[in-house]
Length: 295
Image (cartoon, rainbow, N blue to C red):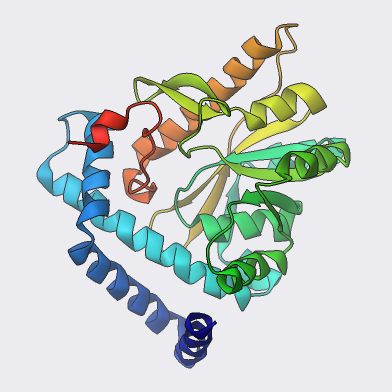
């Protein structure tokens, strides 16, 4: 409770200053963390080496590593910003590309699975989808401090996003699909063998979450890949890609594999275009290739 009270006091003081000052403060925290957090720096290098081999210069690796810390800090800041933002203020920060792809599915009244990644300012992009297009549900893992967890859920919830815990998530997702609603799933996380399907990802067979494809196969949902780009740190783009539908070939597992591979390809393409925006400090391949993190 004390830690949360201190956090509330910190936020109060933070909002005595303009947005630009708040942003510079979080970037300064990121630079400090980069200097002292050797473990995350090592994981970033291990992931980059696994994904790109020896094709990157030392200078490029360091640039991406620093950007990863900056981006994580800005997403933490965005959680606080969301708590104090209105849907109109969120809308002012976002430009949409290929919005007609989403509008068509919404007009059809079909359930949607937004398949995305920890890429760019995902905390802004996620609430933008919910407050501007269609209220979405996300699944979260319980964190240790219940007060911080409530704060996180509230910062998303008042902008239209529903959060459900991993326990009982299946029932909630099925209900949302039957109601023709929307779910947002980060499909770039490390996945267990039980919950994943092996696809090609950066040239390596890699387990990828099967949930979006399963929901498309079972409930006729449309998977819409969506990624949150920025090119100058101020103007943010939600880029939608061609919807993924179940082939309905009669072989459900084959259909799930095909749809999951297409999602993984979209993630890889986005990351290759702007590697600075991905969450490289996550041990993405620890289930498939744990040995890369022992080096």
